[in-house]
Image (tube, rainbow, N blue to C red; front, side):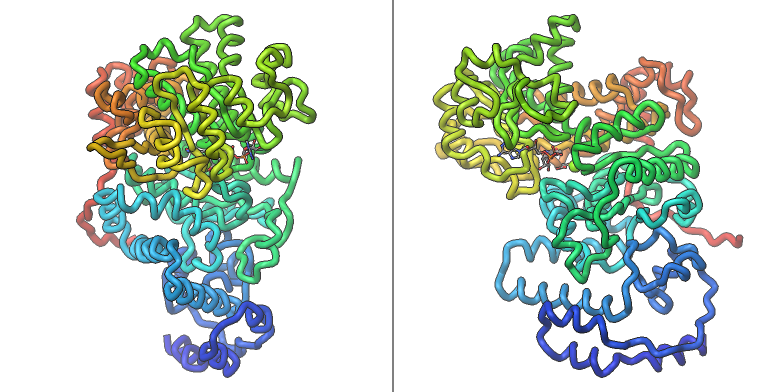
Length: 629
Ligand SMILES: NC(=O)C1=CN([C@@H]2O[C@H](COP(=O)(O)OP(=O)(O)OC[C@H]3O[C@@H](n4cnc5c(N)ncnc54)[C@H](O)[C@@H]3O)[C@@H](O)[C@H]2O)C=CC1
Ligand SMILES: CC(=O)C(=O)O
Ligand SMILES: [Mg+2]
């Protein structure tokens, strides 16, 4: 201790840093400041701690400045972002962030309050998890938009500046060959849920590199608050294989690997090594893939889904939520759900989310039509997909293999006056759709012209608009635009939350939040409690059907097709129970803890719900008792 205190007294800020602290901060200084010498040589401090205990100890913590050898020596590898920075760079980052915050506060930027709330909540998360989750659960409507979309998007964009304490694990391209041992640096012997991202497509914000860890943290906040997964058993993970975002590569604050993304076999070998490592240490863990760019989302899902307990939230979670909403829209039209295969659906966006939705929704239609080859054909013909290059037909050059089954035949669109590359507005005019669904990440794509085309062409009594892209500024349109242009009868859902619209005369235009948050927590919890070895299509379908059936007829007729977020814990419990039931039915359930598969099989519907409920963690302080090692 004495040695440590002596070294602390000696390490007062250098003159250069003192000068820097007194002056207003400019971007240029960041690079200049990197060259200042700050560290005096000092004798080593003896410590009796390892791993996270060091990072949580303000006397010893150096954060991102721990060198690679120290990280290895002190079991810190993987617990910090991969970029090792100097103590001066740490100060630079802090100062830039502080000054930015001051400027934003002075100029009153609208995002500032949301970011300030995030900081306050994040600090509480660092100090006291029970209190944090209690506040989150009790005020989920107010704080989900802070810890989740839209604010989490902003947080990811600014993460290198906002970064204070580490949360989760980082596996980087530089850790190849080390992951199997690094995984033991995580202090928990039991991990139930991992959310992993490679940061390549965070919400609709593109490649945010290592900063994408924020989305894994936000998703896991919902796992804890909605699904009651114990916060001590969740692990956010960032796989840093580089970034192709040149602004980040140029940013002196950037905390990730300063290289372009690995590609091909090199990329796959990193993800393979990560999967092997986590399933070796925690064989029962469930891994949710989040916000991987489309070119990897589908191949990775196919690569792992029959071997590991994993799913892709953007492909499979989004699909289920969209199916539930589409079925809700049919009900809102006053038609039976079995009329779903008659809906004409124009989808803007052919990425992981858009194609995930079309694939699953067309399978649901085909099932309703009898699951024959012609049923599949007929189901696929209900969808028109438009991407950045317009309508996708068989004549599309270099088409993604995942999109091929949904490309339209020229002979089927020619008679409508459409062809390869037709614009969204032309497609809407000619197809006269019942539903317009956006997963394009392009804010305002459903322009006045597109919405007027929908209004003027559709024959549907209650057309539906799903502006599902995130965060808020990427929504294809706002509810105000939808209700004012298309009409008061429209069904509206968006990925990020919007307020309901006052239509006058006491009428309300309901703004639903169509977000995979209504399914992924229940899919994870149901998989955990059933002990299913893999996550089958049937389990995902059961989750979607449960969500679709959750809303009452009166609600649906009013245009409310998804539950309010205040009911997320209840819907998650129901979804989890549906997933457990399906896993048992498909003979995939291997049980969980004391609940063996035979006993699980004997439970009736209510008992399964009770079983789920009893296994959901609630934020209450436990009694603590000291036990010597
Ligand atoms: N509400 C929800 O639960 C979810 C929403 N999303 C959102 O979906 C969006 C897309 O995600 P991914 O499919 O993974 O991204 P992606 O980047 O792979 O796909 C975007 C697609 O939109 C197309 N596009 C771009 N400009 C267009 C235009 N002008 N007209 C029509 N299409 C256009 C692109 O060609 C591409 O096919 C993101 O904003 C994401 O936040 C994703 C998952 C869940
Ligand atoms: C909600 C979500 O998963 C996304 O926008 O990517
Ligand atoms: Mg996502």
